Amino acid sequence: MHQLTLAEIARGLADKKFSSEELTKALLARITQLDPQLNSFISLTEDLALQQAKAADARRANGENGALLGAPIAHKDLFCTQGIRTSCGSKMLDNFKAPYDATVVAKLAAAGAVTLGKTNMDEFAMGSANESSYYGAVKNPWNLEHVPGGSSGGSAAAVAARLLPAATATDTGGSIRQPAAFTNLTGLKPTYGRVSRWGMIAYASSLDQGGPLARTAEDCAILLQGMAGFDANDSTSIDEPVPDYSASLNGSLQGLRIGVPKEYFSAGLDSRIADLVMASVEELKKLGAVVKEISLPNIQHAIPAYYVIAPAEASSNLSRFDGVRFGYRCENPKNLIDLYKRSRGEGFGPEVQRRIMVGAYALSAGYYDAYYLKAQKIRRLVKNDFMAAFTEVDIILGPTTPNPAWKLGAKNSDPVSAYLEDVYTITANLAGLPGLSMPAGFVDGLPVGVQLLAPYFQEGRLLNVAHQYQQNTDWHTRTPTGF
Image 1 (spheres, rainbow, N blue to C red):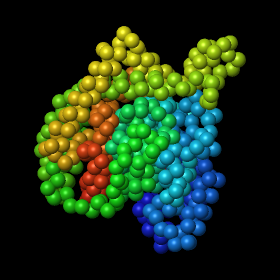
Image 2 (cartoon, rainbow, N blue to C red):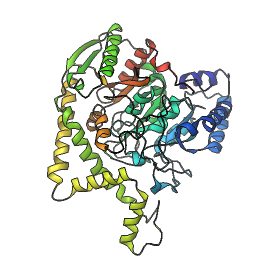
Image 3 (cartoon, helix red, strand yellow):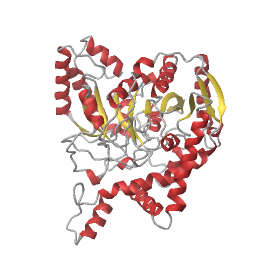
Image 4 (spheres, helix red, strand yellow):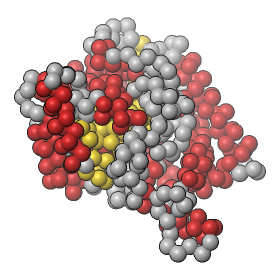
């Protein structure tokens, strides 16, 4: 049963081939057996999962039938889950049990999804490798010596290893799409505001967005359907109707205009990945798409702009973790200042401290105009590039990452080299656009992803293109050895 996709599980439950309780027990046993190799889970929620599975079976027995009713998933451990540890991968929140459910968690629970547990992640979602977690690094199931990508590496590794069919994730600068590329999954970052951020512990509020990680575009459509929608609790949530994402999967690609930015194919891109990207272009051309070269001239400025904006917002957001109201508190503080300093110094890991310091510096009185304000102006230029491009093309295609997954520890002494791996993904976050990564081949036995970008609220278009591509290729069906 562990090889079934979300769509296949929905059909199997509807046809009474198995029950949600049977499926849940089988997957919980599989996680217990195999996850010690991967470290993809922080918490397992066996009691809750079995309770939800029994409730889902009862609802089906009463005639209900939904794609997510009885389907097992897991949540990245920054989505608040009532009464369950929500750690954000940090010592700071190791003892924190959320008093409420995040909107995403509540919506999926209402749809009947079964929560198997909370997945490992880079601390406070800061990282590209899932090595900064207080609970240890996550391993890539395709090669246990390599990273699975970050910050949603736990969700990605668990789904790729067939521990469960799909999981929630978040994307601040590529944290859904990059792990998807590194683990042979389909990952979708929706338009900013499409999925509620209420109850999603913030890293950078103007960039964070929740989305699905699964093996197929079809499964991403199912999970996004349950996650998306307006939420009055989130002031950045967009009141825009949610279409039926599954209904548009089988649309023809005849005449679809695909833009391939010339700036993507620079010296920093592994030539073997470039070849796989162009092979995917040829595949889409066979399906009727029309391809043209375009230009995104300001992409070269995106990384420095992002790594000013994101740490600046992080330094503000993380100021709430002070040892006073909740979370880690140092022992025997001498006074309030000592409480703040030691609680933060002991509770936050090195990468989080690094980004807080960078952000505080960028926002300081003498440097705000020189750094933060200028970065926001560059952000507008990046958005304008995309707006101009989308007058000529329907989607933009390119590599998700410049290189395949690197070895564990390989970039620990040089964080900037890890930041550069986000060069193709961060632009979507700066502009608020939807982006999707889909499997497109392998380099040295490690998966490679192709990224698709679309205009605002065109997630259905991305899912349609990815689904049609997956109907004509088999990269997404490959399974890592041993799982």
